[in-house]
Length: 108
Image (cartoon, rainbow, N blue to C red; front, side, top):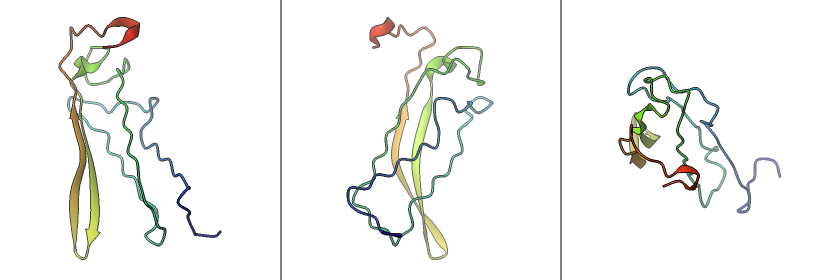
């Protein structure tokens, strides 16, 4: 089984977790690079699951949730010859919510 993958194989990558400290500064971004498996492995599907949370430890400002105006982009950079092709896989902007009522324990 050395180096061979099977359709039922699952690879989970967590580049950023809830315990990852937030980057410092306004509009500061997490700079994380994730390498995909080697090309000789065959893959049918890769799932990208992203979860947002209110970070009471944010370093961006004095608010518990950083005013909830987070922006994320998931980009795929593919080296091709002497250049790099860039694909945007996903993008999301949270609502401005310094005074947003979050719905209590039930959520939104």
